[in-house]
Image (tube, rainbow, N blue to C red; front, side):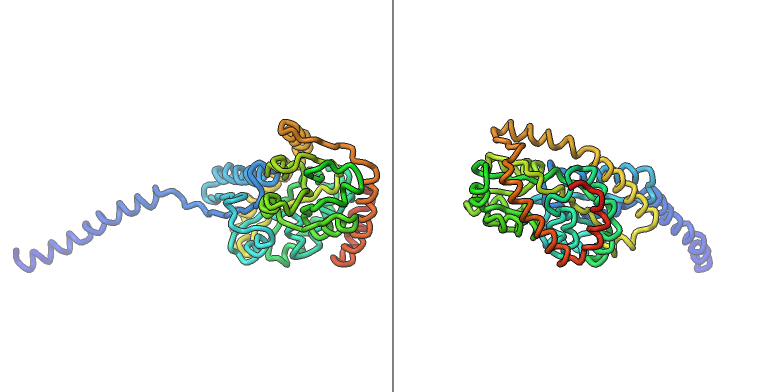
Length: 344
């Protein structure tokens, strides 16, 4: 082949060779699935608990909404109980620092970083889920401001069934109450039980099993839901329904992550969060009886009408602790505003 012919062949062949290489790559890029943006959501409670169940619903709702908007593909991966590498207050730091994108934080855990978050778990402050929801709604703007200090954006809150006392021995009166070595879940509850003469320790739920096994605890302050989810009936055969509080858990996303999302993605998460919150508030009453049924199946003794002596002692201690909390949290104004008209 002459040089001229080679040159002509080369000029004709080179474009054909590039097209042959490029077209399959273009076809692959057009057919390749959109890579989902994955957000981790941690929770130290088991999947059967009210908050972890809400997280699973939230993840499923996000999946359904994202399927209708493939360009905004998002995926929530839940890490619950043992799967969650962060325990107790370490969860707050992990969320604030961006080690995880999302977290469901029990109010008592968040309260270790900012006592304002203990508003929802103030002892004997609300007596119904209607009151608890009214308080949560009224306080939400203030909660959001305080969350921003933790570099967090609020998605939804989940109510717990009322907190009661799980105990090895029946709590029949003041003497039995003072004999408790009880796990409490925030600074307020620790102080209340100390004031009535019990030994009280503020612990995350993840620390409870080891303490019970070692004999360091003989009681736990928890809802029937949390305790049932963690099978406390294996060590604690009694439950006293003192209706101490209806605390909340806050499901939040790291503020930096939130701001990096497109408006369409933020709207998707907000809609899923709204649906999750509405379902949680509407179903929480049903969980109480379901929990009691599970307790009875495991041969627990339920005291649904604790002695008046017991209630009076706890309420007296609670009143002084609420006053102390208001001063510490600088929350007298929000309490006066949001608790006005709520039955005591």
